[in-house]
Image (cartoon, rainbow, N blue to C red; front, top):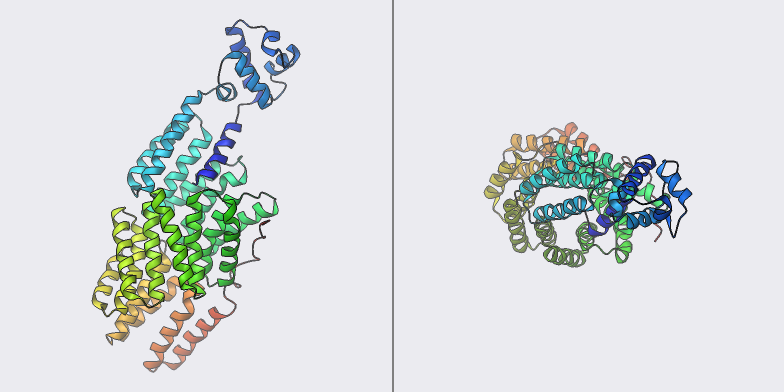
Length: 460
């Protein structure tokens, strides 16, 4: 969670307070213990009658009134409003920051242990905001470790904990859930979560630049995989327009990394590389090791698209080494697929195939479906080059099944072409025509068959 969103979250947490009856009894008890009359407690800002009404629980005290009374009683505002020591929540927030730093350094397992302890303490003391923050951290740890079903549950519980909070405070949990579904291959549902939240923010006039930018940047990946390039480009344009209003460098870095995908698709390679360089520099400053590794991964992809295969291999090997160190199992498997593609193009097909067979054990239809399909596609190409037609067809069919299940129209058309060409060369013309027709169907108006109306435009 970015620092700006964290500040909004903590502001909401400070606004939490007990029911009027509970606060009234607490004020009366503290006043009596200190030997004060209602008049002495009220003066000079309020009347004894107001204090009497407050103590009986018949009025919800305003924040200024509670602060006045807390000052007169010699207690902290938070203690008077919630019955908890302010030091307890402050200590938990500091330790949540430590856990977030542990995760940023790529130590997801250790961070998860910290968050679990903090969650138990937050539950014990009924600290809602801190409980939600711990659940959000556990979700991020599970996502990095590739435990996507567990991540989804943690993010859902974080949302439930924040049910009474303003929507911008719930955005990190909503976004986390969408990303977990996206990585699990549920592209349409990820888009639905992101778009419905954007609509609620924009149509409701909740113009929170940090929250909006986080959502638009997160939508680019699923849009691209679904073949909805126009919508991805629109999300990138909105993100770039919002960026000057956002102060959180982590959100800005994530935006630069996501926008690079649309620039690559438009052939603007130099701009994509520059965008990734900005993201990488911010991640270095913030010491976000896993995110920095993902930047190396994306730069490797950029160089591969531009035909600079030696530079691409170097960047992807660096990304894979960093991700392996941080035990980011799912991300390292995905980077390995990109590296295998470059190795094959450089004539190192044996090494590429060995790498792909190794990572397929870490990928599945429910865990990295799009990259699992990419691995099977590449293994099919390598098998075709080796004249192993049956094995090639088997890999293409498995890849096709994975992409259809995920709704990844962006890659389906190309895969249908490969399968159709293979079937045609082996004399199965009717089957080849079916494959080509399937591919053409996915090339028609990409994205429009699976997505509803685009979300409302932000008030830029």
